[in-house]
Length: 249
Image 1: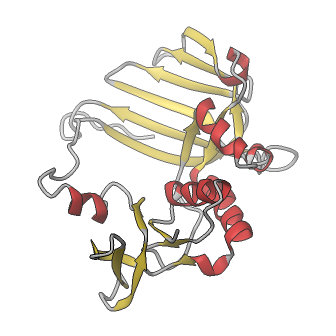
Image 2: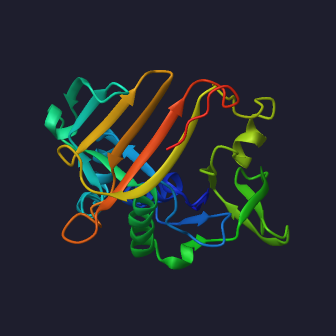
Image 3: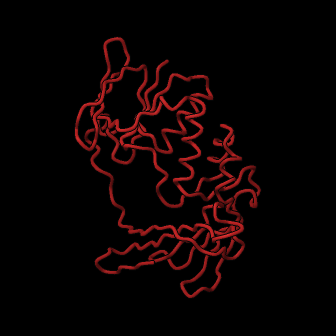
């Protein structure tokens, strides 16, 4: 079975690895960007997600770069502790809750795909323009260079899977009346910085209120010891429209 995946992000790479693990190795990934780059800020992979990645043989590589978050702490905006609770294995799970730089997570997945499928199975500069189904039940897909609009190829496969993000071409074609994503009124600023470990070094901190708060947590072991401080990810959340109440890190 020939499988084409549109989108070479975390979802597309993880899907490719899962298909290989299931014995389906005729898989190609088509990515809009000109290269696979380790970009982004911090994200959290919950224990059930870590379990899936562990079953793909990636746990050691993930733990080598990410932080197994062990507690979640709530503070007031003035720094008074309100509540704390354990997370991941500290809470009795069989797998950790992993805080990790999005780019480092993508890097681990990308290198595993290259190792298990080969580099020629990842096609960059391939933005899905349109697709359809042929009379035999297979699918075809046409790709362009997103920057220039120049056609770069047509692909035929048995299955086409859309992992092409929030503005998915696949989803828009299948659900044309759905409309764009709805904004829920929440504004967030997100960033990554180098900083010294705080509290236990494995804590996620939430300070403030439901209307305005800051969330800070360590995401990378790369800088952990010894030498420069490691990365932390921070997000400022504000549920009030920006024009009325802006905040910044």
